[in-house]
Image (cartoon, rainbow, N blue to C red):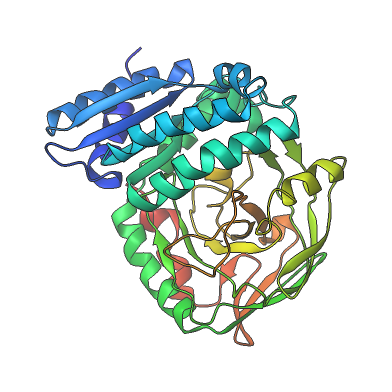
Length: 375
């Protein structure tokens, strides 16, 4: 059945997020059968504005058969093909709605690392992210509802509330937060099993307000690469390479993760962190502000935007906020600091900035409320 909300979402994705213009080519990567209705609306809208849509279907059940058996030469050939296609596109839109997010769970670490380094890094991290207008979003299928531990009907309402909020208003609300972060030199984060200090002096600050991800709602920068010291325990589960990681704990010395543990998958965790020289350093520090996302659902695009959260990301930095860390890994790991998740504080230059997920500045907190940002 056709859902009118997909028309609204498609128009926002094509015109606001990708800013598609007449004559421009847009690549649409479709994952999951249930995303097809939204894909149709996106193709229709892209055509209406005069764009040239190119689309293909590529969910994890198909990728699994490739990644499990491909040799290095095959990964290189696939990367060359996809890179040439990406270079011809002005915009990229990724629809993520796979039927089973665990389809890659039993693929060997060696094969996953080859796919990450030989294929994903040049095609997506180096070309798409740096040189193409792009946006990625998840779709509210039953698999996502299960990960969020709710009914599909309830999840769909939540999804459209989150994805169709007023991102123009959110962008304005982010201005004061970004301004303060640009002036900040040192950051301290304190929470249960967490005491961490680092510098963000001289690193640019970027607003994420619906142009790259849907849903969106974070302001990010990066730590000075060798400045992080202390320890952190993330209280949000993370689904990565088909495995759910819980209670990830890092200990830092001069920017490097010198000890990494988690519940049940510590060996796999360290294999991921040993993919290259940059994967044990942090490439991003971000504050989540989306008032419609309050609880983790094992989906990074949602979890990293949770109101009252922050994420500290092992791996590559972004060109927009460079700290010199280069890696094929970029793994957004989240800590929620609201009272219902144990609380916590963020200090900027020794001054309390956010306590238990609430900004000390009442005006800033109000500007990020659901009432202020809802359509």
